[in-house]
Image 1 (cartoon, one colour):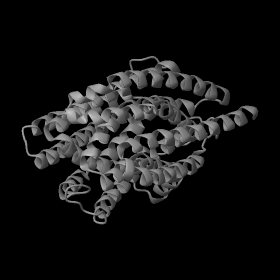
Image 2 (tube, helix red, strand yellow):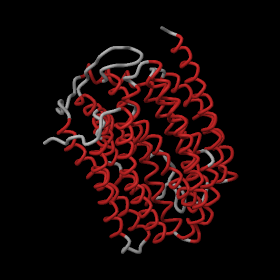
Image 3 (cartoon, one colour):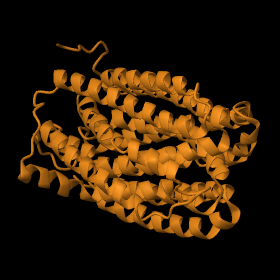
Image 4 (cartoon, one colour):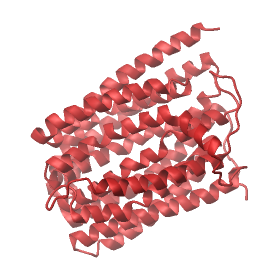
Length: 431
């Protein structure tokens, strides 16, 4: 079965359409996430939502580990032209799928094993309820790995319209199932049922994505060739370490909040961060569509495209910042006790321009094969973030977590942007 393109094939149209499809998918997902958040927060309060955040945040640690940069390297090796290497490669998609299945299976074991070493709390921290939720939600690591792998095919062929359909179907299934759980007024049962609803939704997205991929990929068969698996893993290692550091850098504040502050504070900050995360996908979607094109561009066109992209992303971030700043007080409509989420959200919003710019800088460095520098940069940022969080969060709570997030990302974008400018000038001078 063929899924024909219906848009023009110019660079501008391909980037625009594929970015639009990702925005549509995210709009559906964001709407579903917002409704799910409201349903859980309204029915179970700050404590119930706090427990839900603990479960999903813990497992989210392992989602990015399952990514490990495999998609970016797979695309590098499969482009017909690279502005740096000028070489052609052909790496079967089945190798990527096989490696992801192995890694995600090991990560499930690691997630459950690590849980045994984390202190168990009664009224805060990783309570028995939270631990049960984590165990039940752990299979979503494999489902998310499959979703990420299908997205590599959609990105390679610039068919994010298919990804949109798969993601939207899964999100709608999750919403319907979460809505049915609101009939359960018991906090503990409701949280567990909501977690299971998300699990089923991710399974639906993975299955639909695999079906679409089968129809656009020439090589769909699963491959466990040791030599090819090892090669892809080693090539991805620098970027994988970067994503690992970035993962800890993003979520360590929630973990320290969980271990040192009341569950209600986890819920308050969790809601603010959930809203803050929604627009962060915009630069990601934009770069997902732009990255395969960057790999095919010559040096001058490559950096001209980067400059235009920077101006566009900066303008977009300022517009989003203004809109969300004005709308922040609406959080109290979910439940009056979430009024404390408003200042935390507004602090986080100040970092939006940094996050939009750092996404562009990160993928630009990957495109010119300087990902080893990213590993050093994000490793240093992670260490700084952990130190600051451990010093300030136990004393000042979620407000300090928000400020640390903004300051840390400002440092990241300053350094990564400087690296892009340095290597950009160096490459343009080369004949």
